[in-house]
Length: 188
Image 1 (cartoon, rainbow, N blue to C red):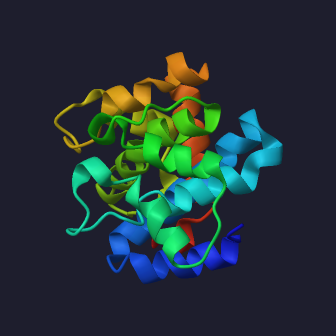
Image 2 (image 1 turned 90 degrees about the horizontal axis):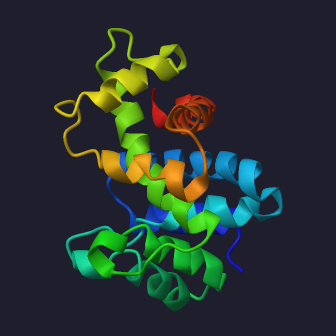
């Protein structure tokens, strides 16, 4: 199985865009936190799914293949990948590739993917641009303002309530705390 160190190196190789790399690091952190809530023994799997899920996000991979192609790329590089991670990565792009999320890990990635961007956007509009100073209530206020970070897939984030059994505000709190824990790596 691919290790965390190998996955980090591979992510840097596959993803030249620094903002996508930061998104992947943020998603990895949030997925670790969600694993602690749902399946602590699967923390590494959750983290790897978060770290690698957009490894195929580029102009060469059609949108309907994103999330699926990344597993093939990982295998072609000589690494083994757990089928549960493969499923979660594919499921995060359900709207485009029609691979439906099924497990807690799948739904965690699906729901938190767009949330990381909303949290970053909320941070960047603050005068000090420091993630440590962002509060859950600020993110919730921006969540309700559909004109703010208009590309945020709010309906997917909100599915945390139905699919994960977590109130939206708690889900935001988990994600925010996780991202604050790696603020330096995110440059925030």
